Image 1 (cartoon, each protein chain N blue to C red):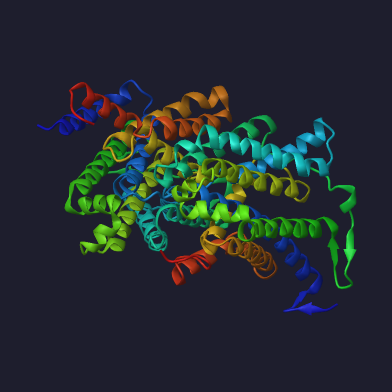
Image 2: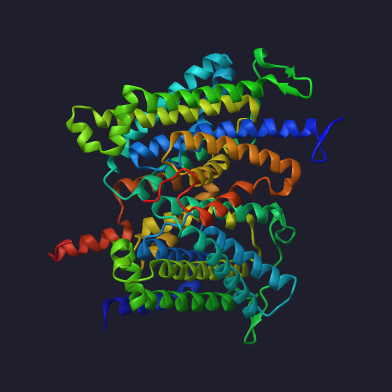
Length: 310
Length: 295
């Protein structure tokens, strides 16, 4: 059995017993953000595209799922799918505009378009503006009442595990190899005959859809959707999670999300608004001294210890 | 009362002026971004934060040191510029060999730190900064009243923008700068101290943001969030204009400010998004930007 398979099984085992000694809502929050960061990593780590507006997919899916469950009273599964689908469509629109520019401009375009959607959400009647969309019912699934945190927990865990597996399959598929080729050398990939724009767009839509799934799940967990989910601060947070954990590594985003969410949870009461300062400082330190992230640096250290060249 | 397109001329000209004022800020900030990007290959996300710091320095100077508007207009940009030089020396200089993305990420972190610190000390609500006595009141142009301070913002920012353009395009110093942007290694081989120029360029860009901040202080309330709200619009301006041309970024900035102002007259709901919509259209028609070069 390969090492990553062992790691994967160990993680699932840990996930199954975690809610018995950690507050389940906190673990669910970590899982939602971990899924968000994994989706983001598919784009930044494996395709080399820095989207600085990914929060908009989290936010869109949150609102659509919330609205579908609360106002249209659809079954929970349909609500989740509606949110994910809406985010994927949004990803297709924003992605097809953004891939017209490369590198640093791509980041600015995604940020600006995300801000536009944010302003729309701020004014649109169905989002509840600054108050957000509150009192979203969780509903039931296969006869299980999701209002019970433990029932919901295993649904969230299943969603995360399935999506994580899907992302791994994507990365190791021929499609994923082409994405890596685009990351390493885009002109070369073009000269080899690949329709680079099509591959980038597909990666963007996939990433947006999975980020949307994270947002839809998050709405279910917290029973509300807020404007802050679509704010550029959240876009920055997901970049930080991926960077801190290690971009382009399989488990990096999971580690990064765990650290950041736990940190925010611990610090929020103690230091208040200084949390932003601490997040900013972590950003600066990561970029200056720690670019491979926790997982990347650990792997490099391990390889040095067993005498392999890095 | 005369009307334009069914809008009272008074309201129309008022919004046009306000658009010009906003456009002046867009022009100054996108100019700074373009100059910094040219030399450092870094998109300075902290630009909005530096603008905010400039405005706060003016307010702090007035409140605690009794420094007037004119002193602030000189001292605050100087301080922000020195701060910029410090940032360049301690952090940014280690990133030049890496992917551009790291510069964006680092300056994003800096922006969060600065914004968070100011929110922590001053709270999110705005601090009022009164208009200096010289500029209170308005000119009566016959068909409208033009507040003197707005006229001053437009004129002074235009002067600063075109002075920058003149220095970069028409002087010897500017020639060195353009040479170093084009080919830093060769320029250094000719005996020009390129690292020093890079450092001063970032300092100058920061000072420009600080200057814009002081200008903005009496026009809007001084708040820790004023920078981040603006910088994203300025990013869209930069995408629309393309960063290849100094004059291009000035013109794009002012033009978009005016369009935004006029949108407020005709369809107010879209005024916060119109710049982004224009960006999307430009991306569809001319992906390299209005003044950009296809690579």
